[in-house]
Length: 102
Image 1 (cartoon, helix red, strand yellow):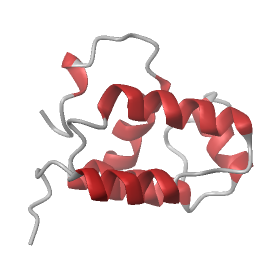
Image 2 (image 1 turned 60 degrees about the horizontal axis):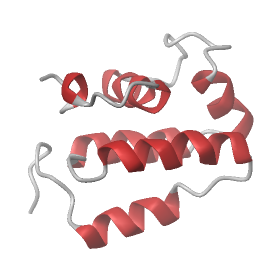
Image 3 (image 1 turned 180 degrees about the horizontal axis):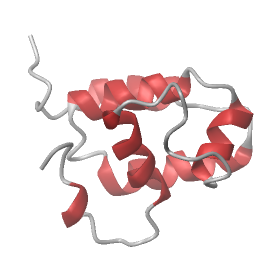
Image 4 (image 1 turned 90 degrees about the vertical axis):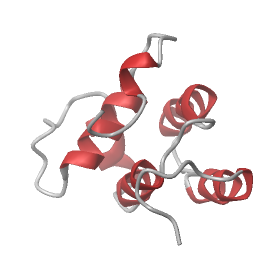
């Protein structure tokens, strides 16, 4: 059994990528960039938060990504807020996003 700080396996990453496919190209672009940057260091807790974000409608997710809705959105928890920051990051420096709570 995984602990929340465990890194995902390649198989788990592939399953997560499949689950993260969206109907809006704009969302897919954010998600694709996220995986390019973080997939090798993605932790279980971050993946679970990403899946909770994927439960949102495409329009709600895009509003959050574009910061049209604040991070205090009623359904967001701390882990989801951290993953949103990671999804929005334009920098190629991933050192500040090595894990939730690190």
